[in-house]
Amino acid sequence: MRSISILVVFAVEIVSSVFAAPVSGTLVFGGVERHYIYVVPPGYDGKTAISLVLIFHGAGNDGALLEQTLGFTDLQRKRTFLAVYPNGIDKAWNGGRTQPTSDESAKSDDVGFVGALIDVLGAKFHIDPKRIFATGSSNGAIFCDTLAVRLSDRIAAIGPVNGNLSPTIASKYKQKSQVSVISFNGTADPFVQFAGDPEPGQELFSTPDTIAYWVKMNGCDPSPLVTVIPKAVPDDGTAVKRFDFEGGRANTEVVAYIIAQGGHTWPGFHTYPGWAKIAGKTAMSVDATKAIIEFFEKHPKP
Image (cartoon, rainbow, N blue to C red; front, side):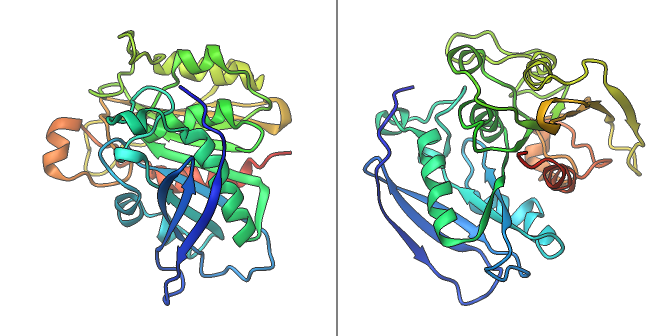
């Protein structure tokens, strides 16, 4: 991945007249206009520092779809955090496994773009620098793992859903600080395989190896507390266990939800029937969106 110098020329905000409605923004970075949307929580007063939650779409999707479907906006009515949905070039993220399709986007420094976006948002809102978080699905989840390695000095915790860490990222870059992790993986995921992917250019650790990496990097107790999650009613055909690896340095923790027979889906979100035929089963016994936000609240930077 070629690094591009950070060049923020300007940021344009299209301000919505409806408070707490999605607002569109653009940021010119590396000579390319980048797009994102954000939702300001109803309780934001401009004085109290708030959390920033970056939510990354999967390949082929965009931030607007996630804002409309995953329930983060609903949670903002009860919890005060700024939700931001960046868009990748060609609807993909260059940072881990899946590369964008065009020559221009394949060279894009998406990690640098995220750093610049954090700066722009920090200038506009009163963001607590110790409470900057990232979550996402699929390619966006893989990108979260990449950010936790490469922007570990800024990201407090990540919540990848249907993603594993790239061994290339793990070997090429050295973390500057610990990052707490809450993750969700299905054993029957057809796209981000639980057993990992050794294909050249597509390499990913297995889910157990990804978890072990974060447990080791954070210095957590390698013997987890295991909780069996009660099955959903009606039974959705999955079985969920939660693994808590506690006692990490700087108050970090690793929590892993392993979903037996789970597919490439977002737990707690009813998948469209057509996608379910391809992606597999969805665990309805756990609300990933709520669990991620609750985890983030407990794990700021020290």
